[in-house]
Structure formats: structure tokens, C-alpha cells
Image 1 (spheres, helix red, strand yellow):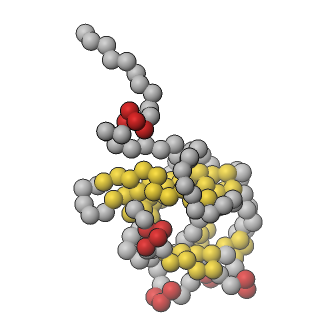
Image 2 (tube, rainbow, N blue to C red):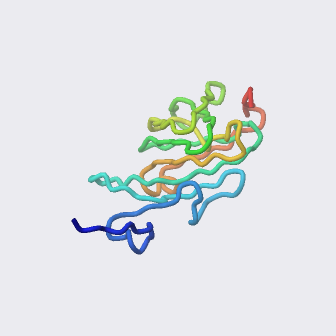
Length: 166
């Protein structure tokens, strides 16, 4: 029986088969800076249609437990998978005319390893690291959503929410 040697994963060796990325220690272009870093479109996945799913990392460090920003996507949902720490997410139902429903936001704890799917239009933003210093979270969106279907709103100071129990 012929033997086949084990190869170490490298971009050069694996390129003809697909793509990969280290999702815990990304080494690529990022948007933002600590405490929220977004490593965009790290691994594309062609699902056989017009849309290409893209896997990104949102690395969040400890920060004040204040909901001061929110975003939504009109044409797609979003997948969220915390890899190495529990996270908190704030969510609100889709609303017309960009009205941010801050008073109706809910906060959910997402245990590491739990995949969450948000519906199109749902208000949210970067997660909060929960009882850990850093959490790396896989974000699944159509490629380049951060640039062409991301509506971000700063919440006025008087309307911001403090997360209880952090």
C-alpha cells in the first residue's frame, strides 16, 4: 500500500484546493482598532449562487458595557460564532426609516461555540467580550457587506444603554 506524507498547511500548497485562515490569530488587513478589530473577508465560500459567503473575524477586547452604536444590513442576515470566549450581543427588531429602537434592544449571552444567525434588518453591532479579556468571533456575511450594505448609527449619549451584570 502506498504511503502519503502529511503536509503542513500553507497558502502555496493549498491554493489549488481552496482557502484557509487562522481565525484565532489573524494576519491580514483589519478595520478598526482595539477594543474592536474587524478582520474582513478572510475566507470566501462559494455556495454555488451569486452570493459568496465570507468569513471574517471580529476581535473584541474588554470595554465599557455601554451600547453606543448599532448597525443593520438590508439585504442579508449575519452569522456570528464566538470561538474562544462567551460574548454578549445587543439586538433589536428591524425598523423603518433607520429608526434605532434602543429602548427595545435586548442583550443576549452567546456561549463560545454557539452559532447565531441574525435576520436581515436586525439591529446589532460588535459583540462584547463576556467575563474574558478577548473574544474572537467569526462573522459570516456576503462578501464586502461591510462596504455596501452596512448602515451604522451612533446612539446619542442620552439614549445609550448600560449592560447590567458585566
